[in-house]
Amino acid sequence: MNWAEFPVYLSLFLSLYTLTLFFIAFFEEMEKEKLAQDKLQYYPRVAVIVPAYNEEDTIEATVNSLLALDYPKDRLKIYVVNDGSKDRTWEVLQSYKDDKQVALLSKENGGKASAMNFAFERLEAGTELVGILDADSFVKKDALLEVVKKFQEDSKYSAVTPAIKIYNPNKIIRFLQNAEYNLSVWLRKSFDNLGTIFIIPGPFSFYKKEALDVAGLWKHAHGTEDLEMGLRFQEIGLKIANTSKAVVYTVSPNTVYKLYKQRLRWTYGFLNNAWDYRFLFFNPEKGALSFFALPVSVLSIVFALYIFFYGVYTLIKTIIEKILNIYEFGLSLSLPDFFYWNFSLTLWLAIILIFSAFVATIMGDKATNERNLRFKDQLAYIFLYGFIAPVWLSVALYKTVRGQSVKWVKVNK
Figure 1 (cartoon, rainbow, N blue to C red):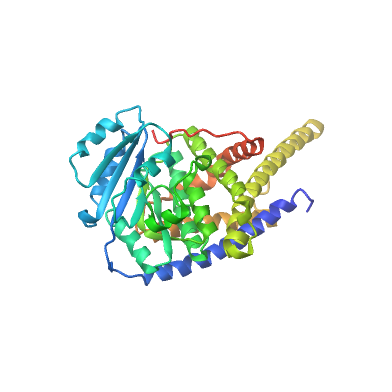
Figure 2 (figure 1 turned 135 degrees about the vertical axis):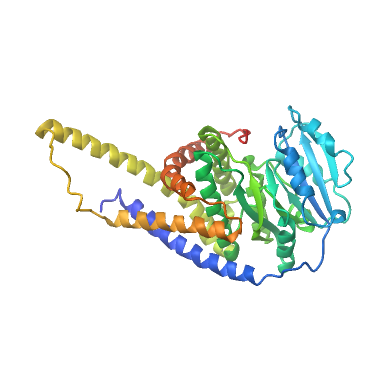
C-alpha cells in the first residue's frame, strides 16, 4: 500500500466503524419507539407555518393535507405565507379565505426565513407547538398525532423531526433519491438515539414555542436555515428528537441539474454553517455531537471526494498503461480467466459498505410503515449517486473556500 492509497483504506474502515455504530443506535431507538405511548395525554394548541414562493402547482395539495390531519380542528391553526410569489400562488390560496382554520398572509419576497418569522410574529396567543411545512410537501393524516406523542414522551424535547419520503418517485433521478431518503430515515433515527440531530428540516418539523422564544427566530444562514437552527439548538442545549412514525412526502427534483442545484445549496450551507459553529467541534461539553457526528459529517465529504478523484486517476492511469502496452507488444486476443478474481481488501470493504447501505435503506423504509422502496431505487442509488454527488461536493467546497455565494433556485418544478 502506498501513501496515496492510505486515505482510501482509512475512509473505508471509518465508514464501517460508523455504520456499525449507527446500526446499533438505530435498533436501540426503534425498541424505544415500540414502547412509546399509543394515546395522547393532552392536545396542545398547534400552529403550522407554510412559507410559499411560486408554489401554484402544489400549494393546494399541501394545505389540503394539513386540513385533513387527524387532530382537533380547534387546536390547529394553519398560517400560509405568500412570500412575494410571481405566479398564481396567492390566487390559488383565495379558496381558503373563508376557512377559519387557515390564516392567509402575504408579504414582499424576502426568503423562507423571513416568511416563517413573519408568520411567527402573528401567531395566536396560547400557541404551544410551531411546525413548518414546505409548500411542496404533503403529510399523512396521523403525522401530527405522532409528533405530539413524541413531545409528550419526554418533556425535555424542544423540537421533533419527522420521517421524510419522496412523493411519486417516477423516474431514474427520483429512484435514487427515494433510496437516499429512506437511508436518511435510518440515519436520523440513529442520530436520535445518539442525541446528535443537528438539522431540523423544513418538511413538518416542530418546535416548542417557548424554545423558539429562547433560541430566537430563523436566519438566512447560507440558504439552510433548518441546519443553522439545529446547530443553534445544540449550542444552547435544547434537545431535538425524531419520530419515524410521522411521515411527510416531499416533491423532489426531477432532473440531474435541479438535483445538483439543490444539493449544492445543502452542501454549501452545511460547510459554511459548520464553520460558523466551529466551536461545537471537539467541545467536551457536547459529547457525541462534538466528537462524532459533526467531524464524521465533514470527513465524509473530504473522503468521498478523495476516493472519487483517486478512482478517476487510477482509471486513467490504467487505460494509458493498457494503450502503451498494446502499442509496444500488440493486441492480445487471449480470453481473460473468468475463474480468477483478484479480491483486494479495498474491494471487500467496498462490497461490505454497499451491502450495508442496501440494508440500511430497507430498514429506513420499514421504520416508517410506509413501504415505497423498490429494488430499482436501490440500484439507481448505488450505481449512480457516487458519480454525480462529487460534482456538487466539489463545487460547494470550492465556493466555500473562495468565499463565493450560492443562490437559492426552485427545484421542484
